[in-house]
Image (cartoon, rainbow over all chains, first blue to last red; front, side):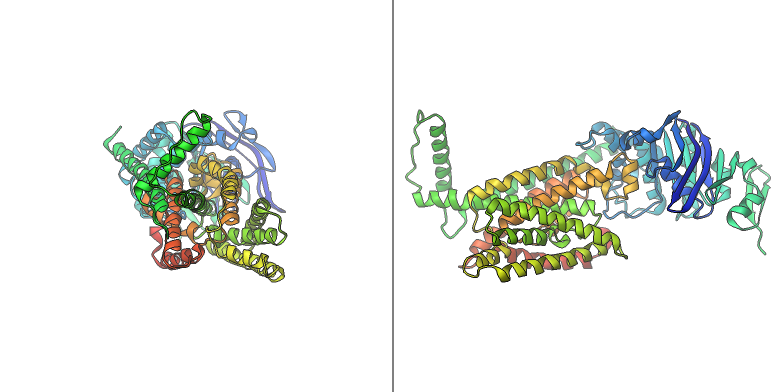
Amino acid sequence: MRIDVRGLSFSYGARRVLDGVSFGVRSGDVLCVLGPNGAGKSTLFNCILGISRPEAGEIAADGRSISGIGARELARIMAFVPQSHAPTFNYSVFDMVLMGTTARVGGFSSPGAREVGAAEEAMERVGISGLRSRGYLQISGGERQLTLIARALAQRASVVIMDEPTANLDYGNQLRVLMRVKELSREGLTIIQSTHNPDHAFLFASRVLALLGGRVAALGEPREAVTEELIENLYGVKVRLRADEDGYMRCRPLLT
Amino acid sequence: MTPRGAEEASRRRLYSLIVAALAALALAGIVASFMIGRYPINPPQLFAALRDKAGEILSRVTRGAVGAPKSALVTDQMRAILFNVRLPRIFLACMVGCCLSAAGASYQGVFQNPMAAPDILGASSGAAAGAALAILLELGSRMVMVFAFAASLITIGLVMLVSRAARGNRVLRIILAGIMISSLCNAMTSFIKLVADPNNILPEITYWMMGSLAKTKPGEVLFALVPMTLGIVPLLLLRWRVNLLTLSDEEARTMGVPVAAVRTTVIVCSTLITAASVAVSGLIGWVGLVVPHLARRLVGNNYRHLLPASMLGGALFLLIVDDVSRNLLLTEIPIGILTSVIGAPFFIWLITRRKETV
């Protein structure tokens, strides 16, 4: 599914958080959103997900504006993967994934056999079937993140929006999660994810959107959009970008 | 389906089985409660009395075409005790236990707070203050219920407002707000007691405040059944969605739940059944906290099983406590005193054990 954002603006009181943001992503894309804390990444996601109402501009899913779509229908189009968190109650991993099917269940009923099947399949795709009976609070941060991704798959939405899916994960888990996400995009999902690591953009993104002070600082293919100046503008650190012998771009901070 | 899918299915079957077992236990508890008491009635007598009652009803329906023989086993005194004293009381114990536990489990979900319960959030004290006011003004038992509900809803609203404005830990904030608003309600109730006529109104308020099922009148029980049903049915229907409300609002919304509408409905319904319970039985504390937590241990946190298990467990719990309250000593112990004796140590256990087991 195609998501088009045109001229999106949003303010908290007098503070403008998003200012004329425009971009588009389509099926198979992994769009990495780069930007320092407070650049407007979360607000952008909240607007796309219909949680916050933009002040100006439009968001369209396959050409249809999302402003008139209700929570339940929107949930069948877009799924959200929050940062791995610790909810109040210790649900089983399976129940957590099953919650993703809610938008497809009648307003007054519980998920049935069909939804249980969808949850099973989603866990299989992410490779966490073995965790089903474990408590969500007892598994590792990486496993929690995979559980939340499985939950988004069980939702059967065609767009998945992820808020820093690798935050708080160790090195191995970061890569495992990102590789899984890349595979999902190959299966035709549209993925929008925020990250702080430029290397992740080079390794896993097909497009990059850089936000600074609520405005688009760069947009395009990773190799064109992400430059040494951009990183310095965004994060205030000097880096060197070089292709290694296998042709992969790597970002190395310059230590002084 | 994969073998692992089968494992999941069997776990769900186990939980359904536990819920069914609780229902069977509650039913057995009801039958036993009919026989236990200062005036013991043995099983053949109970059976004969029930058969006579059925015959009597049948005869009334058929306008005397079917006779209504009376068994020699049962005296009229026994019938009076069974149908006028024990029946309404057993029924009320079950309903109140069921409602307070359902309200506790639901509050815990929508406030994302394992310590939430009707008494801790102030819903019970609010209902008590409203009910005391209605008793003071001698408005009759129906207005007692209306006042209890209105006051209870205002209390919950205030608690939510205060906890939102306060700073600090979310779980603690709502409990502190509950304690504060409860204290205000208790002050109001105390003032009502102060100005109440010490000859008839004051004893009525005082005794009722202790929490008791003793003065149950069949008419009141039937009237309380209306708001209780009106509250419980939506809770049962929305129970799957309560699971999603225990996560963050953003998550629940992106999974297709109209968060504000569902949360408001659940809070209003829980408050309605709390108020109806308080109006007919006075302050019976701790049930709404203890029972849902025991139910969580039995069937896990999924409200699909948790809510029915809490309701049945609550009915069974209050039924047993009421049996103790009317049989332990020569004079009856108000049931609210007993639930506090059980509930307070439970609460200590709850706040001192490790967090992961919630």
